[in-house]
Length: 269
Image (cartoon, rainbow, N blue to C red):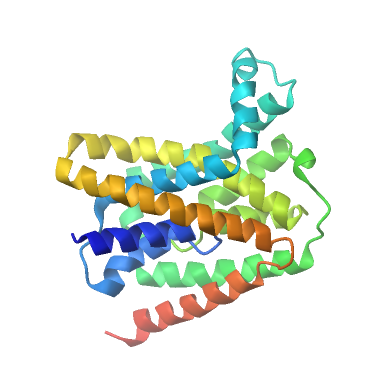
């Protein structure tokens, strides 16, 4: 696997991880469209760790607040802003872990990694995002987060295990459907990604350790660094742009890519 391909995979992952356009879908498509071999679990874990570092750095104030609240949460107390946020993030992560285990146990994961599935999910969930972004009110902010919201958004996040759906896109759609402002919805979606990436990275990490290839580990470290900077740039731009624009540009991209993929899947050969 060439260094250029590693660089390409890292940049694609970094840019798409926090945009509502499906990073997993793009990573699955990358080897199909370039004719290269799949980048493998080690690189997947590495680029996700790079993205994790970016979101932690960007939202460090909130992450620090959560960490400060964890000791109180462990004592069964949810009486501070930090302990409440930590509790809600844990609750929001449970559905995706359970759904992920079901997909792994049933072997459905491999069947979902197709151009047809990615194309349809890109298209359908792009339209759903557009609908709620245009129709739902923007009245709720971070102070309106509660247990019910965390559970609902947790299920929206679980749906995103289907490639092409987009974890950030799905959770942002759920937040907009509940009436959260674009920026508040996007922020909680990004914070939800932290425990989710840690959980998936831990699960996949065992495979990486078992099949440890130190030459590949060096490439993985490079990929993580590239993904970190790409993710940080993409996240910063999206959060800034939400002050002035809607999610429509991402919807247009999703629909166009979805249509192209469906054309490739059904009419080429």
